[in-house]
Length: 187
Image (cartoon, rainbow, N blue to C red; front, side, top):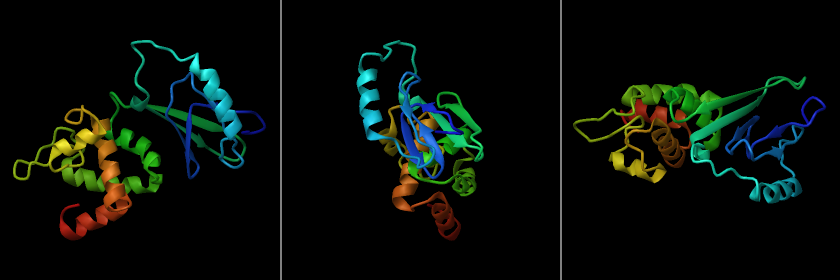
């Protein structure tokens, strides 16, 4: 309940006050604002209802190509929803939207911005002629990003998804990766 009324949102993942929505508009769940928890019985019922109601439209974007954020603006129940198109969005906007999916707070963006500005200038086609590192996160070799999607060479969202996963696995947070980069000149 938000401000005394029920709020419907698309399939949910909750991370420190930010709810990341990653399902189609036809998929929705009831989320309790009080505890930021989803009732398992509601999940089961809604999953059963969705089985017969999913659209098979050929022009629908894949689920992983959209990220929507639900943010509680204040305690009075006012909220804001933002949708980021991962097919054509600005790489920095895409990265900000993806941070919660990896458990990172929005405060980590400053470090990520510094890191990837230094590495590639946020250019998805950036290539280091000496090392062969490629893309926004300067993956070495670039083809390692194929684990995040076959469009790794051209899609900023795929590169960012891979890069955030690499940072989480290798350093824990973007700020720790930035600190390492500052100390050693690479991450």
